[in-house]
Structures are given as structure tokens and as C-alpha cells.
Image (cartoon, rainbow, N blue to C red; front, top):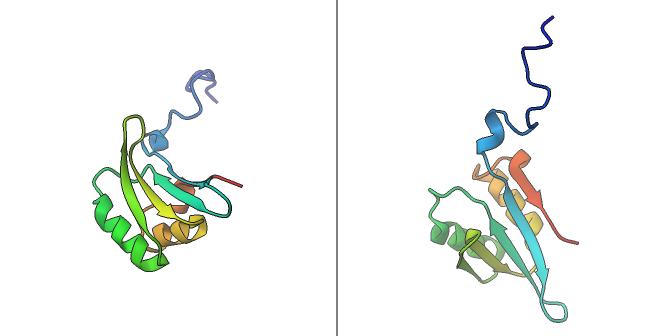
Length: 105
């Protein structure tokens, strides 16, 4: 048994999966009962306009692609669409279930 083969002080996230980023799905409360769903962290090679068009058609809601300086491109959808977006991404193999994080109340 070799105790010196691995560095015990190395970061736990330094494995082969560290290059993959998570897809973050968040809900933001607007005024009253209105809410907004944001999706960030999709792969850069996806056409965000086509993904947005599929979301809008599937969920019967409106949405837009916003360019953020820190986060990059973020998709915004009207309403609380967290579960719908998560199921859509998994069903169409756009993201794996392990790499989707759902935030919000």
C-alpha cells in the first residue's frame, strides 16, 4: 500500500470532471406572483437562440438571451420553469442530471 502516491492536501475538485461546469437554473421573484427563470452555464458551442426557441415552444412562455459581462450568455424565461427546463435538458441530452443545479425557494 502506497500512502505517498496521492497528495492528501490536493484539492478534492482536481479530478477529470473539474473541466465541466454546472448548468445553474434559478428563479427570481419579480413583483407580486410574477417570477423569472434564468439558465446559465450551458456549453458555449450551443446556439442559445435555438435553445431559447425550443424552450419557448415547449413551455408556452416568453424569453430572451441576455449577455452578461461576468456570467456570459444567460437565458431568461417568464414564470417558474425550473422543473420543466431541467427535464428538457436531460431528455434532449443537452446536460447530464449530475451537472444541473436547481436554485431557489
